[in-house]
Image (cartoon, rainbow, N blue to C red; front, side):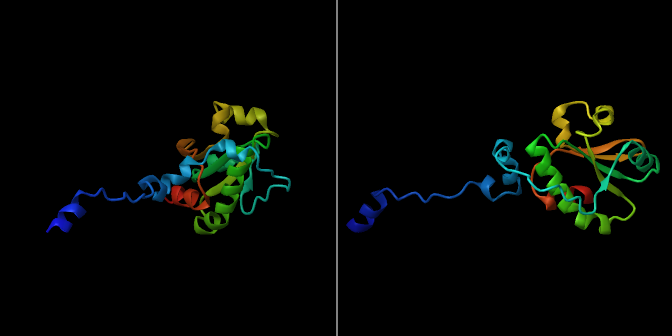
Length: 155
């Protein structure tokens, strides 16, 4: 009886558990964009199945009243280049799955004035927009993985 009482009085060692957030899909939101600043994109960007939009192709895709997903990117920002890489990877799944939608990107470093017509701030240059009925239907600036963008389009 004495031993049992002593065991109860001894402080138990606290097991360290990972926090709930570290096992959450939102953990990837915690990726600091500053870490990407050291990443190098020496190779040319692979567009995979993304359409390279210009003024004419973007306007016609939006006017056709089909949903159009556009990523406005800039090759001067490594964060923007990384999101382009993720979006291009996601396009390999998205384009065959949704043939009636348009998936593409517009290079703001080449078509600055056109980007200014659609993007109101520099922080939105890493945002993917969904246009429907000649208006912005939805947008996301999440920085996760290609599956995130596939799930976002599905919603």
